[in-house]
Length: 256
Image 1 (cartoon, rainbow, N blue to C red):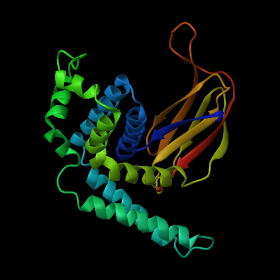
Image 2 (cartoon, rainbow, N blue to C red; image 1 turned 90 degrees about the horizontal axis):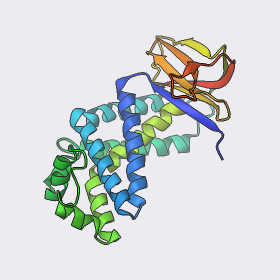
Image 3 (cartoon, rainbow, N blue to C red; image 1 turned 180 degrees about the horizontal axis):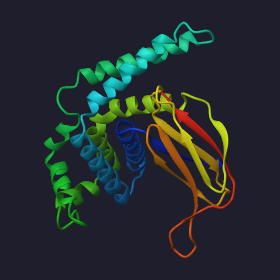
């Protein structure tokens, strides 16, 4: 069992969107695997959230920029001492394949999903609280009661335009999260502040601490300076208060 809890703080909007999508993709996969009507409803709701993010952002362009940037960085270290060239070549090949697939996509990703009358109806009614009841959408009710193989096939079809994006985001975030080693730190009286080197392209702050500590990390700031406060939840639903204890934690300032 993992006894460590990690809090992440993205330092730019691009990484913020990537992490949101990562969480939504994980939720979609979890609920898609469930066989109850509630699971399938939840999977559809998450897929609508994913589509909403794609409508508001030119994510294909953003991800291709990130992939190209990572290829450039990896090529620079290819001849460095101690680099596993076989592993590096495999990673570069994977990045090239994903980039090729994304460049081949015309128009906004996922827009073809709305060609499904059923999915379009669900999307329209989902903006109303409880608006997808059986009496609102009998076709949706019928679909929810179909055999699991039919429902899963449809979910896979509707989510398929996002598969390459999902893979790309996983790769990018994995590179970022593992770009630098963690440092052991102590927040004196629950407070810690760090200044970031402006010449370095920091992307993400990671704060990890033992789950047994009765506090959570509240991170604020920007790409040049971040403040970390360790807050203790209130037992009577009042506002959490900053801990007065010295809190040991690990800090990772992630690059790439």
